[in-house]
View 1: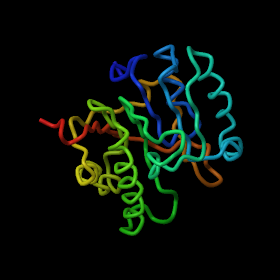
View 2 (view 1 turned 90 degrees about the vertical axis):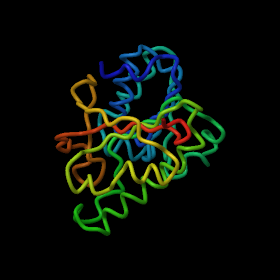
View 3 (view 1 turned 30 degrees about the vertical axis):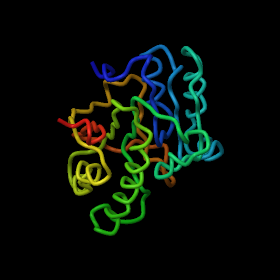
Length: 207
């Protein structure tokens, strides 16, 4: 049931992939990567240093159906300006556990603001990249301090309306392995707890 949002004919943009295990899981389930564009903030060199399994996952991505487009060094806040993404639209734009980096105590307002700035830039970049009926999916933890990011409100301020907050269970995605993504423990998992997949559309499409 977890993958009913997507089908092989959907154009999908995956944002901020770490070790590529989430996009790999979707690709294997759909048995095709033909319409997938997968992006990482890391360079290919950074990926090799952070995640021992990243290149293996990338190879697995190419083993199922047509090869997806894979782009490295993509800033989520400036996607719409990227030369390989400019002018393209997608049925689904997917960003799991966005995070501006480990820059201090997560509960302090300064750090919360940094994360909100990242998401604001992302949402502003998303709007021109969504197809007319497209959806933006952002997954994050429900508990504080992450709830203090006020993700639906941020999206609304950028022209996106919330249509659903669906439960997210990492176990529904075989092979998905969430990672911290930074520092000496970049390849370690972080605890998830209760998580929500926020689903947004352009506000003009909200009933």
